[in-house]
Amino acid sequence: MMIKALLKKEFIDAIRDKRSVFAALLGAFFTPLFFAGMMIFTLEKSDDVESLYIEINNQEQAPHIVELLAQDDIFHADIPEQGKHFQLDGEKTEHSKISLTFASDFKEKLAAGEQAELTIVSDNSKQESRSQLRRIKGVINNYQGQLVSMKLMARGISPVVMQPLKIVENDTSSPTSKSAMILGMLGVMILVTLFVSSTNVAIDCSAGERERNSLELLLMQPVSTFDVVVAKVVNASAFSVIGATLTIILTSIVIPFIPLHKLGAAFNFDLAFAVSLWLIVLPLAFFAAAFQLTAAFHAKSFKEAQSYIQYTVMVPIILPMMLEISNYKHAALSYLPVVGQQQAISQLFRGELESFTPVLIGSLVTLLTAAALVKFIARSLKSEKVVLGL
Image (cartoon, rainbow, N blue to C red; front, top):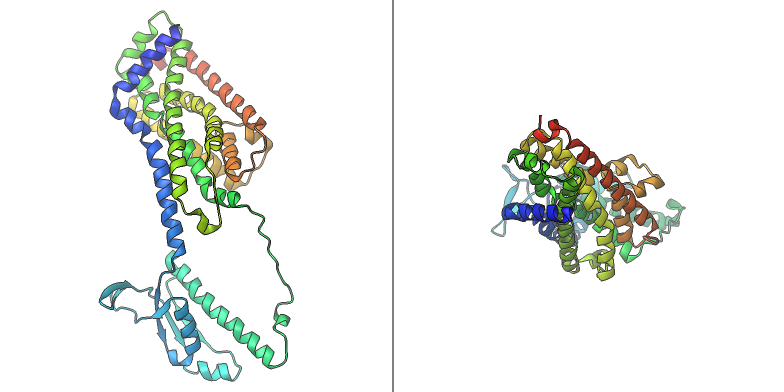
């Protein structure tokens, strides 16, 4: 009964500042929309081949190569004297600032079967220039391969001599697993939303109450510190659950608009998938709230608590990233808070989550860790240094 009264008090305090609640839940709306917009833009752009303008000198030496470049939407244009833009049909067009020069004896040496020289000048310090250069060299290398094959055949030699090995690739990935490669980042973003949604509430009911001098008054009442902390954790975790639920619902709405079919991928975000995803992240909401309250209560000021909370939000990003970089693999990782949920979500997206047993064990470990943090905070609140921020 006492915890119920405390929880009611915490919830009323939390929703009193409507701007703070809105800011906390803003990420739940922003994350799926941002992800969908980014993926739609990326996939639509990858499907379109943009025209590339380079300066081609001595074109008469290699008309066939110039024609092949044009077929790949690579055209000649003089490098502008200033800037990167030039006028084309009355419109402002960007130049790659790349020049391709065929040697003056290019055609003669090519006809004689000698090595002909061409020079490409580009600024390789830029990522865009490097990708453009690969595109140009790809056309030239294809022409070179065709030329070698024709010369071998003219001499009665099979072109197979140049390629004694035949590599056959069989892609065993399913449309669902292909989509998982793209949607994998979405799982991390859902975990981040889970942490973000409880930040404002966690700060306000800990460091905020201390600065308003209401925390000391609350602890003077005939209630145990454990009950107080449980009420605060449950209240903060409720906002995490609300944020994660909104994110999952909105994600199910926006995913059909992402053109995954352009990559031969497909994904069915149905009710069963949404419920499974929700059950995986649910225990993490209590851990996130307890973890953030631990950081906030042990800060000496409200501003310091805000700084600590910002670092806790980075946990679901940093931990999976560190494991990915180190390539560390161990069965125990499936049971750790944050890491276990991230791996379970990744397997769920790939359609490889065959058993929920590791998820259940990981959820239990996560809840036990949250309970340990609650006991730690409750014990800390018996100290004047923590209550008064000394």
